[in-house]
Image (cartoon, rainbow, N blue to C red; front, top):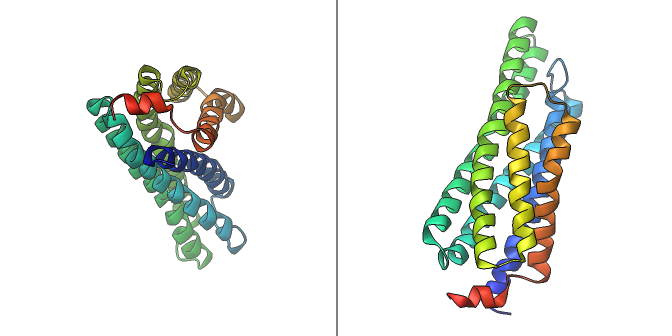
Length: 226
């Protein structure tokens, strides 16, 4: 097994790790902080901590994907390789930042339960923390994820490192998720509709991760400029 085959396997595993960690971690965190009172108790604190750790794992996986893909992409287009690395590193930073709000709510909840802060102060701080997290997650992370994904799928399409249907599927999915999230900034869009638009990119990254683990990159395409 050559180095490129090993790299493909690692990248595939990281794509799957990032997707699972992001979905599961985000679900756990939101299940705790999305309640009307935003109160973190001993009963749900463990879930919140687990969710935050998974979100940090997602950030680490994103950095790993970008770092491993950089030398592969650089052989074909250095500018796109640098752009992809940069966008994904910024995305990873924002993925790490979204745990700040849950951490703040944990601290605020402890002070509230000790009667250290008033109910009005707690509610205001909770609303602000949740809104800040939503802004980073739904706009900043999304934008840099889509920019990076657009570069990746474009290069994959041009080089045929993977079958072109995966690249086309990915490009269409990126546009879908970008459109629905930008619309959500202006319109009230339910979680169900958002998930429908996000489903193509979720399935694409899972499929691509499995493909990379099972089959790797297309050898002729990899070796063409190696």
